[in-house]
Image 1 (cartoon, rainbow, N blue to C red):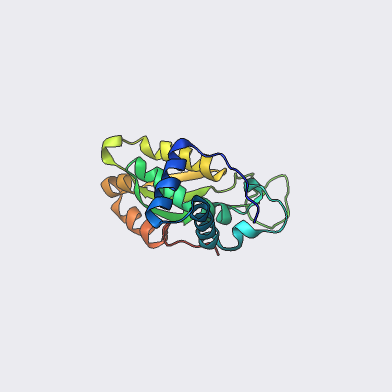
Image 2 (cartoon, one colour):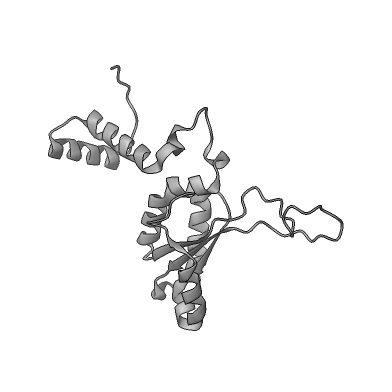
Length: 176
């Protein structure tokens, strides 16, 4: 099989080299195995016919592709127990009332964002949820609202229990 060179950061190259040495195999095998595992974990998403950009994928597929990265980035900020409350109103025209006919008296409503419930680090303060929203919005390329489970635990415990009951842990969440 013909080979091609790819460029990676020095840190990534070192990790690949160390794994190849540890496993007594080639760097090509390490990369091929990692890509196969990546594709298997994301199912058919990475095998869509034709060339599709990330922004053209449904929000559920975007979340599946970026789930592990989102968990890792949030963990670096000491955020944990990430839960999916709502996937957002994809493709919604923002009209209240759904599929009803649009008239001049129907108020325009912005589409509902992806909603995540996240346990934030108390010492990072109340603005941490806003920072996590910014990060998640950038990763998923759609509007994201992060509700702080820490804030709810301190100020509205019944709302926290309702949110936990109606959400799914991101680590267990699957599209569809």
